Length: 386
Image (cartoon, rainbow, N blue to C red; front, side, top):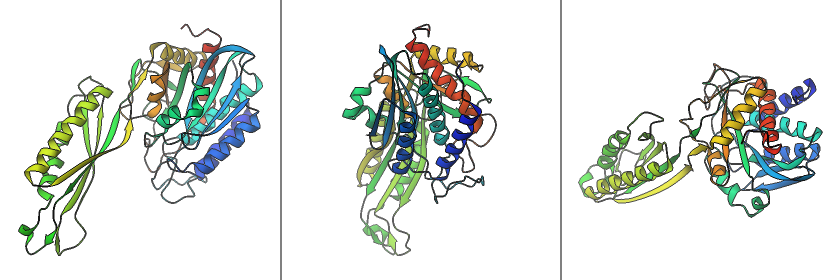
């Protein structure tokens, strides 16, 4: 079994912590991408591609004979959240922090790169994809639609995400749904402002918004991951201006919608639009709906999921089918074009993802890298039982 050396692990841990200290949010991953490109070039990749779907970077390791292309994907971006943890490597950028583990995923992927640099695949090729803008759902779609990605198009795709809610070292690989689809909807209402002493002279969106702030979450039903599951979460609301002399004429409500399939999500969006439009009409308001942060459903191909579970077992991890993520993950886009699977690697008890004091467990770098490489080699060698 291929393994990282103690020196590798020390280097990768230091790199992970350096990335943690210099986080960049979705779409702004300039410095992070440059650092990753430098690391890949130092490994002697056969092809280095930058600027994919924004700031995406890919390093390609070629075999000596034709064969499948296996893509292994991780993420570049951090979150717009202030870190409250106090490790020596804590974020040096106010209001931005790696609180989802993408710094650890990058270090893990570079661990795969170190092992591939020592023993390239005999046939086919492995593409290490460092994807931008995962946190807002734009990155995977942008990468797949980038003309330069056509030369990298995979026959198989795998990804790993750390998960504190799972016992440390346990690999959850669901068959079927792996992560929920979701979309953010902004509902904007426009009426007419008036003097606070004569609100009847205007048209305030207050009543419409108040009704919707109760009615929209009430559209939620079912239990995840049941097929009829729907979740509508109110995330933000704003009414008028912060003043005492003006009756408001504008307002907006943000909701996040989550289901277990892209089709059900589309139905839920239609229901929300109809409800909001009817409510706006009743109050003689103009209404506009815009969508944001769209994530497609992540669906694990059964053969790809089997390959990941077999790889996890082969490197000494407990591998189970497990439950899908209720959260969204834009890796699902890669599964539209080839067999793909996402693995959730347990990080054990501790702060949850996106908590302000979360920090990646460096002990997951070595097993994560070994697992991903094992899955890739099994596919390339035709030994994955698929």
